[in-house]
Length: 433
Image: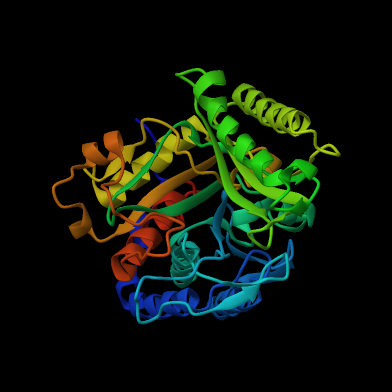
């Protein structure tokens, strides 16, 4: 007969959630109205640290810049790391919500830009603070240690900054790392998969050099805008002609900036390029092809000097440990029901740096996605339709200026999922008696 005395019932962790939800809703609306760019999350970090201290956690601020780490112990047992990211995006909000952001900030180039929580990191912070509140309030119902990580700068790969700031030495060593992300699917659904769950990402800044002059005499110039246009078009062939049909790759030119006036040919043009890949071999193939095309087009245009290619940031593949994923899928099913917890058939093409924690610690990690949008938006679509065909047209996804999770149900679901997953590792009070 199998001994199950060590198993923890997740319901013992969620006592008091209904009463807590109004406070969480207010917290979420406050965070949504006050987003901050990557590595600028000072106000958010202050709110997080104050909440954790009020709940009774040991709190460390300024980890990796603006990161916050809370530690709560309840006797002997496994150590579980729960992570939320805190940063917003340079997006002008168009949701029409009464608590919509009107914030602006200076970006790394010194430009004033609008700021919005267009990726749902405000949801993540509120959900984790809800989970930490209930873990503290129900401390006698579980045994182990929880490390709550509020990470800065996920949008630009901030997790390594926390690792480089002594995270491994300063905090209890986790036995598992757990994280979640709100997604543009109906609230009440959640999914993950074994192995690769999100792909790798590499971002490049490219400066092309020409010879400027008057628009009436292009023969006296080397036009970097024409050079850039040729590169943009040629880059479209990398995936379609150099990556196998059964392999995954994406190349996006997200920014092209050059010139100041219609009759002046500038000296330079700047491109920002993003590359997605699901395997190291495809990643290397795409990076090599992109750089080859940039240099070749520059040479073909008789550029006066070689282009400058600078790596901006890089995200590794986010890979779920198979055994730990089984436990999380069990938790998702217990929280939501078997008809609402699903296995993703293939990796998502977005990228994350969450896996940095598990890799650095050498322990299993699992990342899952849970729905946050009004189910009415998906009328006529089944779960199978969404998995097979993707979102219906017109549904605002992450990074959209119209991305607006349904706050109350989304927060309730997110808190329950975090606690349900954590309960798969934390132990019952009498487990070691």
